[in-house]
Image (cartoon, rainbow over all chains, first blue to last red; front, top):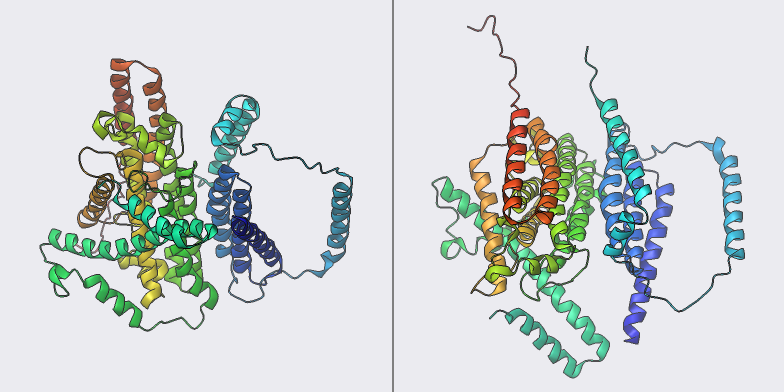
Length: 170
Length: 382
């Protein structure tokens, strides 16, 4: 069984590496459509990581919402933009180097501070696997108020989208 | 007879246990299921093409393929050889990598979803506790491969076909998922195994389709699955008379065959899921469980081919209207009816649910009056 757990371990590392690489290529690829596809790969990799952490439900929802729906929307938008065929259609704007650099420095120093100051307690893993039933009960019990608020917001968004997309009648 | 395949697997694993180390035995046990599915998928696809051609031929008063082997049984093999020896044409301006990857990637979700289908008693490859959701999530990633095919070809017809296909798949996914909700409400589980177990009463005939909500959900789910695998009458993405062959216009040889393979495997798995959710899966009297599953699934596939032989292709607006204006409200009402069924007592729940569903159906058909275009006036034509 030792070899098996080793295989699983390196399999998870591979999935993580692939998703990080894909995330890098989202920003680095010159072609917008390829970048969108790399984003899809990164999101699938994240779903794989969730799966390895025994969050089955979260992994499946990640696949359904991000890869299935959001990615489709992004690729649709990319496909509708003109001049996408040219190899270097990504906007090249060098004026943003300084703000980007400072933002990166601030973000990474904050991240470093957080990582350094967190105690990171290690303890024997409890049975952390949250099953779908628990999730459902929590949404309908403890977190029912935020759940309902979100549904109201979503309805508002749907109605708004319908109003925006509607043809103007004379 | 019932457990023949399960026993076969145990025998192979037992044989492996005698001579291999422990960790290899675990891998063997996984591999056996994978190999089984990897054989089942393509073979199903091959013989579905034959079945489709035969059934369509009979409906059109022809005989169908009958030259290769008895009753044309070797026709799929001949087709396979033909596909493999055909020239592989790639358009000069195509995005080579994306164009190559699309047919490869489209087969992956089509094969992955086989993992959660219960083919018989104890015959689910992976008993995920989110099985149904897994099926829907994985099959929704097909859209990306279709996008890749349509964009990578650099062809206007491909692009139009891809756009149509994705618009259709996204629209029909909504009522499809909502049609599954009543089943999940009644079983309290997302696992395909648990759903089949729940339909076991009455000598294996207590199928969900025999309840009002189950019947409505089954019809909606089946219609949506016809649309999901781009089959006639919802085959607008491949409409020959309008856009050549849609997103796979620029594919030839084995790449084209892979698109076909994905489509037929999707047909099979979606019919299998309909069987699992509403027709009792492998439950049934007398016959072995896997035989029941395949009988029901092939009956549904026959209905799909029957659709193709009977119905003309829909218009785009009709197709979208069916999903958003008819099926979607009906699924929402159906969820309410399921709640009534769950909480009310015996005679009341039957009359109430039939009443509510019938009224909704009537109101929706009244509201969705067919669009009649203005009559054309030919000033000089007559």
